[in-house]
Amino acid sequence: MKLKEILESFKPFKKRLFFQAYFDLNNHSFSDFTNFSKSERNLMEHHLHFQVFKKETIFESKKGDTFKALLETYDGLKIETVLMENARGAYTICVSSQVGCAMGCTFCATGTMGLKRNLEFIEILAQYRFWSKFIKNRRLDKEILNVVFMGMGEPLANYLNVRETLNVWIDLKLLGPTRITVSTVGVLPALQRILVDPLWPNVRIAISLHSADSRKRKEIVPTTVARFHQKLIDWSRAYFKKFSSNRLRVTFEYTLIDGVNDSLEHAKELANYILQFGKAKLNVIPLNAVPGQAFEPSQKENINLFKNKVLHMGVDVTQRKTMGEDINAACGQLALNN
Ligand code: SF4
View 1 (cartoon, rainbow, N blue to C red):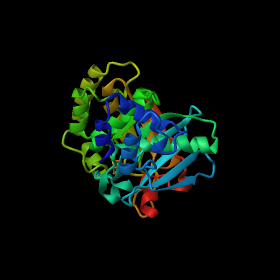
View 2 (view 1 turned 30 degrees about the vertical axis):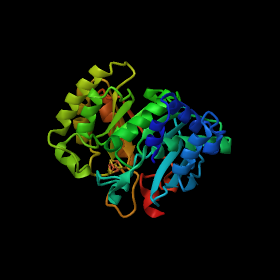
View 3 (view 1 turned 180 degrees about the horizontal axis):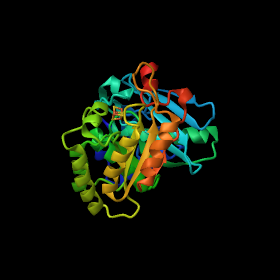
View 4 (view 1 turned 90 degrees about the vertical axis):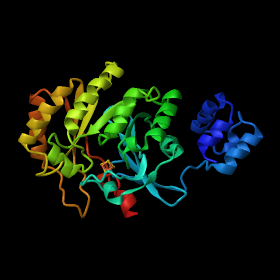
């Protein structure tokens, strides 16, 4: 039996009790779930692993501001999750949603692995507990304030398990919806599904754009469909209509790759595109180079010129700090190399 089937066998209110008990760091096994009967606890112990991952290896950056964990599943696969200090002096965690990824973005280490499988709902959920426990054990003085789905995998390709995870975190008030960002390469059928799905929470959506030009984007993100950019504009109008919160906006992620998408012409084209979205933000990310791949990060000077250009054209732009380069920060690097 999987977790979902076990939860369905309980009375409905027990589902919430289960998650409350699971995220209580004083509980170390299912036998500590004292709100459950002995037979219910036996059922959990028989079918589930309280320690969701078989092996957990943690890497710490020299500066001590980033921790990366390689987590091994019971079927012998490896995923990554990251804990990093953010600009507000708290922690952001970056979680994985799949083992590997089918999207094949050409600059990405995970993309070279192909898709091994979707993560189970509990395997996504557990990444939050894993870092909470780590913070407690290490007596770190910051709390987790944000979660980003920017680890291994395309979260919208594992839609139901990601949705379920989001709803548990939000329901338990571990995080508010605007503290969670689901970063997608732009899987349009799934984005459309969000618009009509009453169970999809109003979390932030970040689109990994990487180019405002279709042909160029297809070279970087091979899954780019025809008329992708226009379809995304149409989608965003419907999205803002559905979730009319002032705190909501679409964020664009733009990985800057030397000589590929980082010229002033690219910046101008990008700004003209983004300005059509109204409530939008741009996050530029210097590429985390993956050894053996042809791409290099943009030069510092070019990054600044690029940012200034879009800024002067009226785009709200920030630059993501590259962190933990000494611990294979690029998504998928640890899983590939260990
Ligand atoms: S960048 Fe994201 S969507 Fe693209 S291959 Fe890597 S993990 Fe998949």
